[in-house]
Image 1 (cartoon, rainbow, N blue to C red):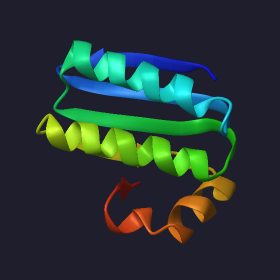
Image 2 (cartoon, rainbow, N blue to C red; image 1 turned 90 degrees about the vertical axis):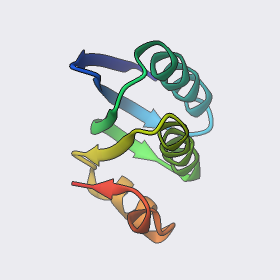
Image 3 (cartoon, rainbow, N blue to C red; image 1 turned 180 degrees about the vertical axis):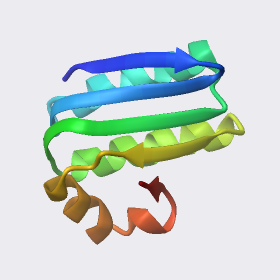
Image 4 (tube, one colour; image 1 turned 180 degrees about the horizontal axis):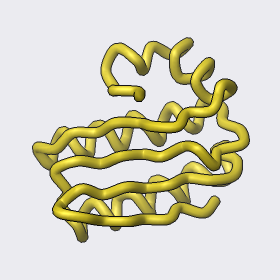
Length: 101
């Protein structure tokens, strides 16, 4: 599961592509944890435009990133969510706590 990071002015963007299922979720979580620890961003943007599939593992990834950013005093938003992933995230109620654009 590739994750590409860009950073500008303490704003970290993580572009996730491919399938975010139980096989790739751990790798994505570890990559996000490392970069959040290194960059200490004020804002994390998860760009899901390259995501082709997700299941409940994707919910866990988003919740973990949201918690980590809250602990660091930062914010998080999710952009370019594909329709399939949006259905999964909204059914889980993530739209009530995480900002989707």
